[in-house]
Amino acid sequence: MGRPLRIAVAQPRCIAYDVLANAAAHEAAVRAADARVVVFPELSLTGYELDALPVAPTDERLTPIVNACADTGALALVGAPVPGPGIGVLAVDGEGARVAYRKVHLHGREALHFVPGEPTVLDVDGWRLGLAVCRDTGVPEHAAQTAALGIDGYVAGVVHAEDEAELHGERARRVAADHGVWVATAAFAGPTGGGFARTSGRSGIWSAAGELLAEASAAPDDLARTVFY
Image (cartoon, rainbow, N blue to C red; front, side, top):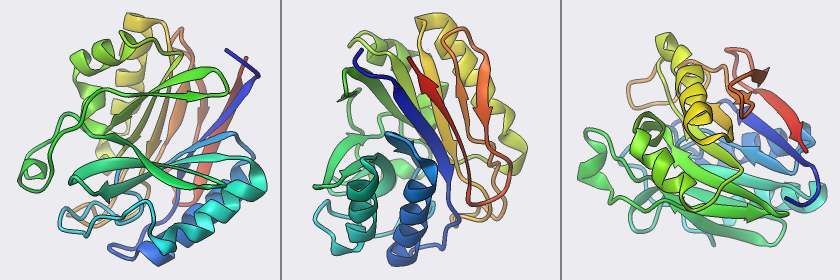
């Protein structure tokens, strides 16, 4: 690894389909996080709306997030439907955005709208971050295939119902135990479309020993952060 890594998991409020408004909420989260990496939930730019139009990396509505990253030195891992089409993670920094990952293990109706991606690792200042989206975290083979690429941490954006908050910790502790890596999970809070009138919140970060290091509340616009050395 290189220098210490300050990482945050954010759960901004979401307006279904409104990329511009949601980008503004992401901008605010990046500026508040004081972190090198800020992780956002699954489909955080559109809400969990499977028919939302893809968000291209060149989309001008991402400009507020790009500007926030430029001002803070952050890398934002933003959830969005992306060209492919896939349930994607956009890696946004001060120079722009790119598609960093597409969800591998699609669930239910997702397979009618999207195609799966492949396990992926993102290098940030010498830290190797394995990427995941929601159901990926519940499939042990995904973590195993990602860990085989060589990772320091397993980073996920998810959307879970209000009564599923305990899933974050259960899955994080399993990944930590199986692979000896820390885990960061950003979860939606509040309504997010697609039938999720209430979601879990409680985004969290766990050590490689499975210890909960930081946890957000169940409220929209909250975040949690920690530093790895």
